[in-house]
Length: 485
Image (cartoon, rainbow, N blue to C red; front, side, top):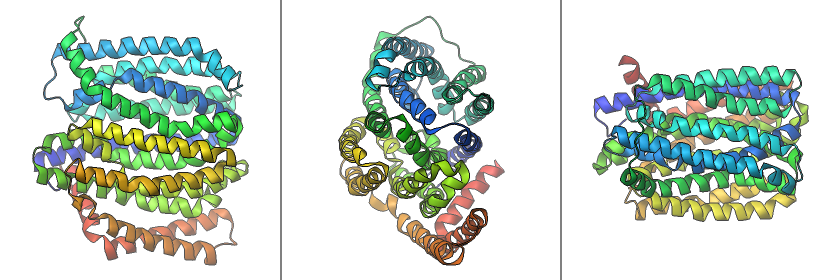
């Protein structure tokens, strides 16, 4: 990565490769599991668990307190500081878990979904394992020791996927989705604690706790707002249109979210640690950001273009004919992923600059607009909502760009490679459109999608060759460097 010395660059790239391994394995396993479960379970099961997860994810964000980010970026960590962070996390998590257990029946009554209460109560237990895993995760991330983090995810995903499929095939319904969520948290907790030599002491530092909270509150607030923004649509759909329609939305957006998480988190897992080490050298910092953005966009753009142009055929082919409506929604919402490819690193940049408050302000402002759009559009159906979401991302994308330049002092050169990457995406889209609309439209879906895949891949490679050769060569160089180490 330009801007980094060879040792840090190799550590970062090697960490990215370990993260890529676990993400690719985990997301592939989750995708296979989703295919099986979508063919066995009905839309209502997916909707109920999605609705229950909204409340649990919000509680999980609150329980984390932003302390993981603090521990990753702080210069040194003493044993007392680490212990203080752990006990703080666990205490808050236990309190919030208790609140959710007690209020679950009221939440179920508010949504007129009696089956929601027991799902919430079991999912809430996972919050304790999230809190207990935070400090080991931070210690391993600081050391760029990504292998245990990768193994945690891979083993947990395997247990959750196999168990949920067996449960679904034996008639467990929505509970199979609950197991898929909770089992990886329990397994991950065990793997992480086995991987770190540090053990907590019965110590607590008030000054350290206050320092963590002061730093962590904006981070916590940002994470909470992100959860409300990302899951607020599910909350509104569940309240306005019901669990069954929410299940259709979940399938429609799940593929896009899996792909975005797969490709962006591969780089972002190392971004904060890497950026924090070069923040004081603005030239190296800018180059590192540019490289990370370019890598994420180069990985994400072709997949999003492919999903956007093939979803009406792809979604029913993969998940079954009962999800035709989800395919129509997915086609629209996939274009959002292209916008996300441009701005997915903003949070890490602000935290590396030690300006989490700015990220919080931006997130609050954008999230308020997002939720207002959801409230207005959701009653008109999922297709209208999907178009509204795309409009929201296009309308507000420039706000973050301007903020980085004015408040962060970041050169717009960080986006210099994006026009080339988007041009390559346009070549791919043209090749895919010509092939899908005119050459293979009447063929069986399996053959049609196979030919589309080849046409899209050829179009992307030609586009990268014509417009973004330096970006492709830089990515190849980073991979070779990591493999040599």
